[in-house]
Image 1 (cartoon, rainbow over the protein chains, first blue to last red):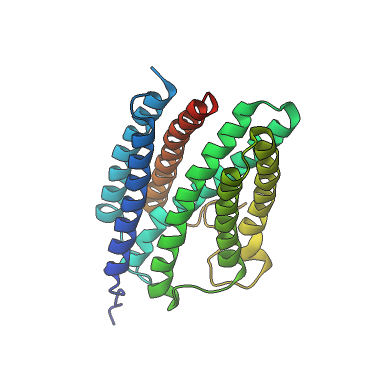
Image 2: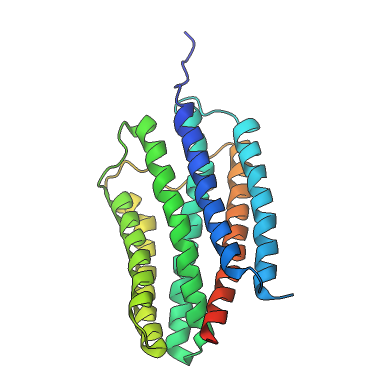
Length: 37
Length: 218
């Protein structure tokens, strides 16, 4: 009998998108605050 | 080249390497057969947790050094590390429930590991609010140092909570006395991600320290 791998890729995609948004938003915030220095 | 511009360069390199983490984790690391694709959240969640803990550990170290030698550079470093650690804590606390929901069947559980981690986030927020609330630089640095040391004391309890209490959260698979219990290809992806998140932390702290340095001259 073959094993069935859970179909839950939506959670993975959401986590990767959320991480990218948080990291890029913080990087942009720091860039804005240090611009010109 | 200023500290801010060096920090921007380090951050840019780290962001490019983060793209590599995404590609390696999503396209070149196999699926875990019991958890499915959701297990790949592991490659972001665990390094984010590492960076959040590293940040608080260094806040504590800088706070101790500040109280010992009263050098304001340690206070500025602690402030920078706390803000960056808060960002990584947000990543940890958002990716964690997104992993827990399909695997545990619930977004959140009030067990020791999760509750202590949430407490760490509140400590970070409290630390940043305290720094905003106290106008006198000397008093602010002293009060913040005490809170920073309290936050560091929490770290071993968070790490050991999975051994001390019954919890849904899995036990460490890398930071433990025995060898890592992870297939080689997954371990390489995880260690690569650890390196990238650590580099991101360094780049962010360099920039944030530069902001604090500028503020201290006003």
